[in-house]
Length: 233
View 1 (cartoon, rainbow, N blue to C red):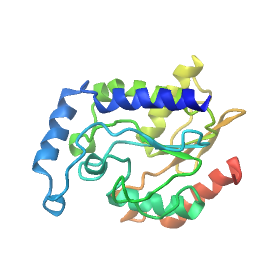
View 2: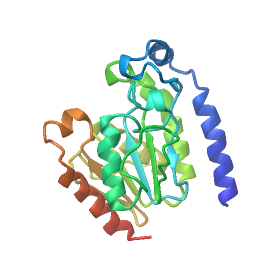
View 3: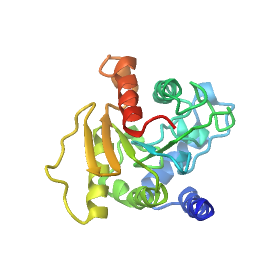
View 4: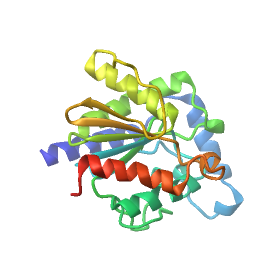
């Protein structure tokens, strides 16, 4: 079974990193890759769609919005090399899902345990605002990950957009709407079925963390709740 899962993910990875379905995003990511930014001028930017990564047998699946222009679009790994990632990996390490509290590159030794991380959009969008069509174009990758991650017990949605799109994905896989249809709220926990829970959190963006809308204690509470759901492994 594990070999089959690995093969499915390898194919998904190959399909994803060669994707050019969204012309606007392709132009933007290639522009960033060439122009870079001064503080990372010596970097060889990834500049392609960013696949999910982590433990393919994970019980925790974390879903964000999109790669940051000079974060994951530069490093090639979700939530790596930017302030949002600093906030996330500190919490993951504290909760025991990561072997270290920081991530700056694909080769920094980070390893996830019982956790997989991906996003709604796999290319860095201008102004961090994907279009409706771009969300639609990327949706199939999220659904394929849903199928591959057969041991998932908790889906953690980082931000309202991740929450609303994951709700739509769950409804499409069930072929029936969720009733009552939940509204986004930080700390929300919702039972999807006997084996799956949905958890919502504010996104660990600078806009939220610098203003105190999302504090370290609030984020740690989210992961304590998740560990209570899945138990220690």
